Image (cartoon, rainbow, N blue to C red; front, side, top):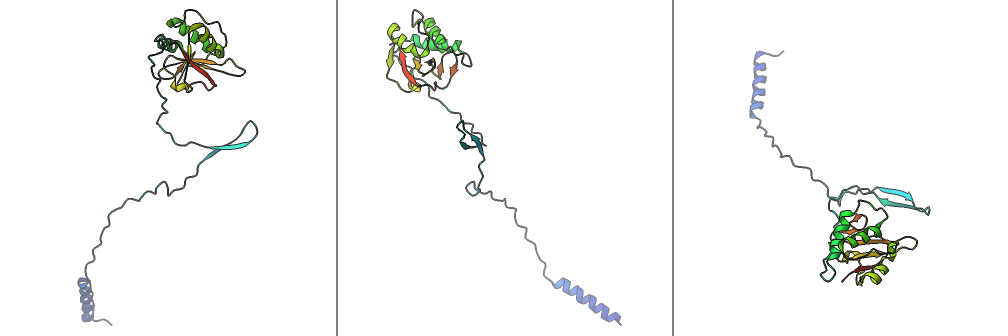
Length: 199
């Protein structure tokens, strides 16, 4: 049986224990960002595309998943003051008349540009583009330049390319690229026979 005195003593004892305990303060830690792992730490699997070649051999190449906005820049052509200035005019005329894509009439368009600029006074008779060099040298006073790289050809020079079983290719060097019956930033992939100009 609990008396009134013992009940009061229990209540006082509880009150004292509550008041005598030290107050605990909770420290709040700042939120720290989660560190991102370095690219070297993470191992990324590179996807590959598998295919068979014409010979039936299995090959694979990596799939490009990122876009690189830096454009490939090709060198501008230099202007050589030793060559006939009308050749630069021929390059401009050829550019104005050129199409977006080839029409397999490169030598025809180059002939027309050379005639229109006044570099030559009659139309060359050769039909195949790979024969243009011989025609220009023997009949129109063109000379072969000591240039082996199409990008090193001066503005207005005529580049002649060979081919075993095809007509070849002819183009004129412009400041930004190459022109025949179409404009191109890069030269032909055919073997270069020579670079020709009238001095």
